[in-house]
Structure formats: structure tokens, C-alpha cells
Length: 95
Length: 373
Image (cartoon, rainbow over all chains, first blue to last red; front, side, top):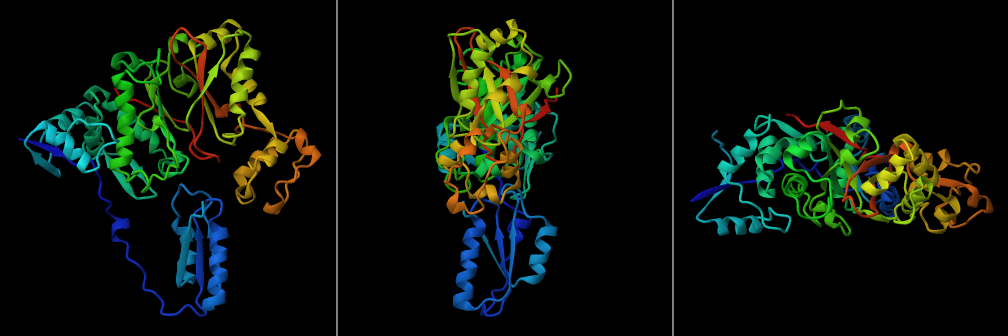
């Protein structure tokens, strides 16, 4: 009989505890955040999505943020305006 | 030492090897089953408590403890005495400037290169001679492999899931070697990186696949280095990123006899590894990313020796080449310090290697850490 040990790490902490925010029932007039992860075409993709949402769902203001570097997480300072102003945030890679 | 951790109870060795495949805990090659006894011996060979964090990855909020590192080191086939090298390499990857999440997950498919300097090379048999980048050497193979297993098992970098490498390359199994300090014309890489002589260090780098630089026909530094500069200026990998050159002892000897310093060699390579802005435009190397990324723009503007490059603001017109673009030289990297020189390989043969950085931008620098004794 032998016992072998688990080499893996199960994600715990913030990632595991994260919950999805409540979904708004309609998007008309809602402020939408666009968060590009810093890759080449993330904002191109998001801008097009916002355009379509404006046409089809009548969304309100748009708050745009592109991370300077895809390899590092968003800081709280960067996230704060988006958290305060937006009811919906869409993120994209667009690599 | 008694370890209280998750595990699986099994009847025999073969079953243990197979269960590691079933659990998706391997890199495709068989692993040494990480039994409690083997893991305890691995941990005991390092200076770290089992719950000490050797690597924190902020993008995913994951901490890799010495214990998890030891489990993976056993699986990779490390001898316990290698563990301090493994731990130092993980600490180097964890340096915030390295930004590990990028090279660990990117389509670019980077390998994690580990270059070892100092007395630990001889003590552990970390190979720096013939075929140093190839198979045959336990310390090289297993230390590098441990880093990959940590990425696979601890950081979730499973191929096609979080590791989105378009192709990857065999260096991703393991890419660890020692510098042949004795054949170097210069101080050891560790000393060039700011450490005292006699200290053992690891230097890590996120490397794309290497390029052989074959040169048997000249001992002239300029003619020899022109071959390196040509490889470095290849448009496929030309970027503001960094470079690693592993000089074959024969090539290093030519520079030694001509009394070329490290700094002079770096400066010469930087000066000669360039392409014209016209070439970059013709091949689409100047892409829309340049207009939103200040670090990429800096690369173009800083090195516009032939005049300020005329960059269109509209990506659709990028293909337009102005006559003056032929005279604008865009170098690989941002300066001579972006070229890391080290020495390794067999005493016979004029084969060196150039490794471009994974990063097309300016993240993921060289990071050097001391190996605890």
C-alpha cells in the first residue's frame, strides 16, 4: 500500500468566492462598462459590441477602460470608477 | 515529518503511475509517484517550511507553497538536493516584474528558461557542455520539468484551457542549463547580473524557440557577430523584446582572443540587429497594436535614426511605405542591455543559439535570484 499526494491547487479565496452580480432585467439607458484586457483588438471588439447594444437595446453611457498590460490583473483603483458607474461590464480579449 | 494532505491510497507502483495520467497530473511523460516519504525528503532538502509561499500568481490569486513545489519536484524526477534550485527558480518566476501570467498562458507558447551559475553547477551536475540544451542530464531535465509541472498542476496551465499556446515548442517540457563559466571570456552571468563571485544563482527568461547560429568560417568578431545579428533581425521574431544568446565555447573563444568585452559585444549586436521601417510595414509587423501601446510606439520612435518615422494614424493605410522608411532603422530590443550573453555547449563545433523573448512588448525581463545553500 502506498499513498500518493495531490500536486494540484484548487482555486480558493477571491476567485472561488466571487459571485455573479445580479443581472439587470433590461439594458435601456443602462451605463455599460467596456473592459479590454490589453491585447491588440480587445477594444475594437468591445466598441462594436457597444454599438450593437446601443442599436438593439438602447444602452446609455459607455465607460471604456483598456488595461495597459494583459499579464497583470486590474487594480482596485482602476476598477473603482467602473464599479461605481456601471450596471453592466463586458470584458474581452480580442487577441 | 508527518504530512497531512490530500492523497490517494494505491496498491502498486504501476497503478500509481497510471493514476497520475488519469488525474491529468503529467506533462505527457510518466512521473515518479509522489509518495509521502519522497515528498518529505524533497521538502527537507530545502530551507523552506512546507506552507511557505514560493510563488504567488496575482492574476489568478494562487499561492504555490514549498509543499506543492516539492510534490511536483518529486514527480518531475528531481533528487532532493535539487530542491533549492527549484525553489529559487519559482521565486524568480514570482518576481512581479516577470508577469508570469502572460508567458504561462499566451498563444506565444513560451518556455521557462533557467540558466544556473555558481558552485551549485558542479555540485549537482547541472550540465553546461555538449548538448546542454538537449536530453541526457538529470538535473537539467528535472529542474526545468518541475517548473512546467507547477504551471500545469498548480496554476491551471493545461494546454488549450489556460495555456493557449498556438503551437508551443519542446523547450516547454524543460529548458534548464548551466553556464560554462570556465569557457566564458567574461565574468559569470551571475556577476554581470550583480551578484558576488562564488554565489549560485538562477536566471529565468520566457523564451520562444531557439535559432541555431552556425558559424565555422571566421574568427573575426565582426564577421562572426554579423551572423548573430542577422538571426536576431529576422522579421518573424523582431520586436522590442529581449534576447538570450548562448555562445558556443568556440565562438566565445574568438571573442576572447580578440579581447572583446561583454559590453562591446552587446553593443555591436544591438547596433547591427535592425530592420528598416519599410520592411516592418511591408510585412505587417507594424500593426494596429502599435497605436495603442506606448511601449511599442517608443520602440519605433526611439530608434528612428533616419528621421522620425511617418506612421499613419489609420491602421488601414499601414501598408503604405514611404521612401524615407527605407532609411529608418528599427532595432531588436531597446538597447544593448536587452541582450543577455552566456556561454555553453560542447568544446567542438560552431553552433550557438539565439532565443527571442516571448514578449513582443516590454514585460517579462531577465530575473536573477540567489540559490539558498
